[in-house]
Image (cartoon, rainbow, N blue to C red; front, side, top):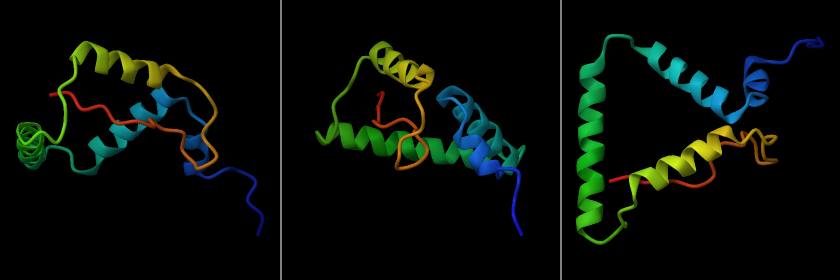
Length: 96
Protein backbone atom coordinates (compact mmCIF):
# COMPACT_ATOMS: atom_id res chain seq x y z
CA UNK A 1 0.00 0.00 0.00
CA UNK A 2 1.44 3.36 -1.05
CA UNK A 3 1.44 6.30 1.35
CA UNK A 4 0.64 9.62 -0.27
CA UNK A 5 1.13 11.77 2.80
CA UNK A 6 4.45 12.13 4.65
CA UNK A 7 4.63 10.83 8.21
CA UNK A 8 4.58 13.18 11.16
CA UNK A 9 8.33 12.58 11.61
CA UNK A 10 9.00 13.48 7.97
CA UNK A 11 6.92 16.63 8.30
CA UNK A 12 8.70 17.61 11.53
CA UNK A 13 12.12 17.08 9.93
CA UNK A 14 11.23 19.72 7.34
CA UNK A 15 10.56 22.40 9.98
CA UNK A 16 13.04 25.15 10.79
CA UNK A 17 15.35 24.66 13.78
CA UNK A 18 13.24 27.02 15.90
CA UNK A 19 9.96 25.29 14.99
CA UNK A 20 11.44 21.82 15.66
CA UNK A 21 12.67 23.00 19.08
CA UNK A 22 9.26 24.47 19.86
CA UNK A 23 7.54 21.24 18.75
CA UNK A 24 9.93 19.10 20.80
CA UNK A 25 9.24 21.16 23.91
CA UNK A 26 5.47 20.90 23.44
CA UNK A 27 5.70 17.13 22.93
CA UNK A 28 7.84 16.68 26.04
CA UNK A 29 5.47 18.83 28.07
CA UNK A 30 2.54 16.72 26.88
CA UNK A 31 4.00 13.44 28.15
CA UNK A 32 3.13 13.83 31.82
CA UNK A 33 1.40 17.13 32.51
CA UNK A 34 1.43 18.23 36.13
CA UNK A 35 4.33 16.01 37.20
CA UNK A 36 6.90 18.75 37.80
CA UNK A 37 8.29 17.20 40.98
CA UNK A 38 10.24 14.62 38.97
CA UNK A 39 11.49 17.27 36.57
CA UNK A 40 12.76 19.44 39.42
CA UNK A 41 14.67 16.48 40.85
CA UNK A 42 16.22 15.64 37.49
CA UNK A 43 17.32 19.27 36.97
CA UNK A 44 18.82 19.37 40.47
CA UNK A 45 20.78 16.18 39.73
CA UNK A 46 21.92 17.63 36.40
CA UNK A 47 23.03 20.92 38.01
CA UNK A 48 24.98 19.07 40.71
CA UNK A 49 26.65 16.83 38.10
CA UNK A 50 27.67 19.87 36.02
CA UNK A 51 29.04 21.66 39.07
CA UNK A 52 31.10 18.58 40.04
CA UNK A 53 32.44 18.36 36.49
CA UNK A 54 33.38 22.05 36.59
CA UNK A 55 35.00 21.77 40.03
CA UNK A 56 37.06 18.79 38.81
CA UNK A 57 38.28 20.76 35.77
CA UNK A 58 36.29 18.66 33.32
CA UNK A 59 34.61 21.66 31.72
CA UNK A 60 35.13 25.38 31.39
CA UNK A 61 32.77 28.19 32.28
CA UNK A 62 31.41 30.27 29.45
CA UNK A 63 29.81 33.69 29.38
CA UNK A 64 26.05 33.08 29.39
CA UNK A 65 25.36 35.87 26.89
CA UNK A 66 27.81 34.31 24.40
CA UNK A 67 26.35 30.82 24.86
CA UNK A 68 22.78 32.08 24.44
CA UNK A 69 23.75 34.09 21.35
CA UNK A 70 25.30 30.93 19.83
CA UNK A 71 22.15 28.92 20.56
CA UNK A 72 19.89 31.62 19.11
CA UNK A 73 22.03 31.76 15.96
CA UNK A 74 21.71 28.01 15.55
CA UNK A 75 17.95 28.09 16.16
CA UNK A 76 17.40 30.82 13.58
CA UNK A 77 19.54 29.06 11.00
CA UNK A 78 16.97 27.68 8.55
CA UNK A 79 19.35 25.52 6.58
CA UNK A 80 18.09 22.21 5.26
CA UNK A 81 18.53 19.23 7.59
CA UNK A 82 21.90 17.56 7.45
CA UNK A 83 22.27 14.29 5.49
CA UNK A 84 22.71 12.46 8.80
CA UNK A 85 19.15 13.44 9.65
CA UNK A 86 17.50 16.04 11.76
CA UNK A 87 19.80 18.98 11.21
CA UNK A 88 19.58 19.95 14.86
CA UNK A 89 22.06 21.84 16.97
CA UNK A 90 25.46 20.41 16.17
CA UNK A 91 27.48 21.62 19.14
CA UNK A 92 26.76 21.58 22.82
CA UNK A 93 26.85 24.66 24.98
CA UNK A 94 27.20 24.36 28.72
CA UNK A 95 26.26 27.39 30.73
CA UNK A 96 27.27 27.30 34.37
